[in-house]
Length: 293
Image (cartoon, rainbow, N blue to C red):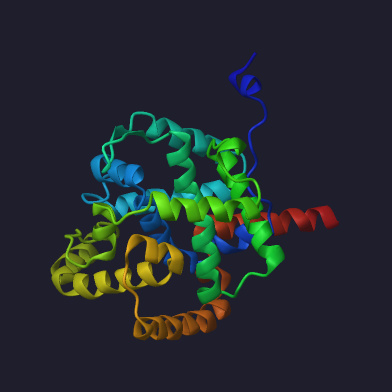
């Protein structure tokens, strides 16, 4: 018996044309990712794991690129999605240690791994209100169902995630009340003082230029990153972590997001969607055309 037969059919990614299919490949989703990452590492065990084992300080651009590529595979990868889920579990198999509360942790323990995944739903839901449009009741339910599908792709068992949106919110509020804190990694992600190396992608001449200008570019970029990270985090999560947010900042965020909502929809598809999403959308359209013949 093959290993594939032994483990049964692979879980399938969310369906083409679904809420997540439209949302996660849109370039506006990039603006939501820092808030999701910060909410993940506000969990003591997740924060300790990232603090002790991640290369986010020494290779932030490479880590970001790899993380984004992985996320896109979960949704648009087709048959590759499940293999990416298995790869991630292999990668996290040896990540263990002691968290900020003196508790032993393992990256793949169900509570920790499920929390990392769960954060995407409230952040996508909140970010869509600002950057796209508020999701209707049916769309929220569809988004949650599709996010559960992504969880299965990542190897998360149904028993370890709330199976309905009604069950999710008490779980989420309980995590905010009992587990979430302002970890060292949260401080670095929302602060402006952490050293960040210049981007190391692109032609040599461009890399040299960025390196020369980086001392000037980094401070405003760090402030903007912190502003979006805190602003696009759900308010209850923001409060649980202890992140300040003023009415002035809220008005600035709304003005910025209003511009984004006007500009992005009129961009050509090649600029509006990330490369893997764009290819998947084109392949889906072509498949539908062939079926219609």
